[in-house]
Length: 292
Image (tube, rainbow, N blue to C red; front, side, top):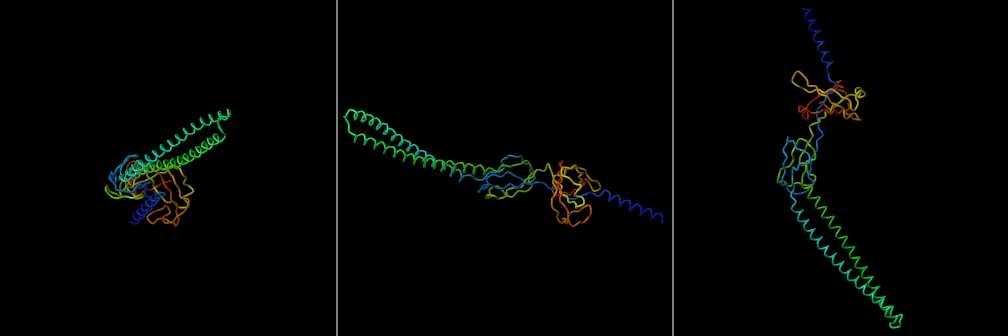
């Protein structure tokens, strides 16, 4: 009987030692880099085709915000631009008239200069012509100043039209990345506003196991290092995956309550992120283990 008891104790001790030897280096949970897509415009959400759990491709139109007010504003700006362009044409016509008068005066000046040489004209007549030419130059300069002002107004109108066009473009909600919709925050026909979240999306092809290691383990871990990742396959066995260390925290933090470490409860730990290719078995929040 004593022999049997002794044998049983040896088996338990060996099993205990074996369990310790197979204890993983770090524990944590899987997460992903998610993106919250927010509205870039104010208005009624006329169309919104997004469902939680749905795979959505990048550059897909998933929603439209009402653009009625913006389109009316754009039409108004085009009308203003047309009126400004008409003023510009009118100013140019005035300049053309003054330039023609200037040509006529130059012809008269040439004639008077010839007559003056022959004594058939007076100096006063020549002075009068020069005075009229000076006045024409002043008038042309004044009209060109108006032309500059109108050109500035036209440039402002074009800029405003471009701004309205950009605002209309932002009313089209374009999905930025390939991924799966995690959460949906809005519904069609709701009123949305600039900066209001519409949905959350994440690329689940690559998952990240965030684990915590002690200061003693830290010197043995390097960015880019391949590590063994374990997840539960069933109640008794684990599934092995390959991961790569992609980030190591530079500062220590207190051990999160739900996280284990190889040295059980240590006061300060360092966070480490391990990138793992998702074969479809990994889910957000799923526990995992790592061996460095």
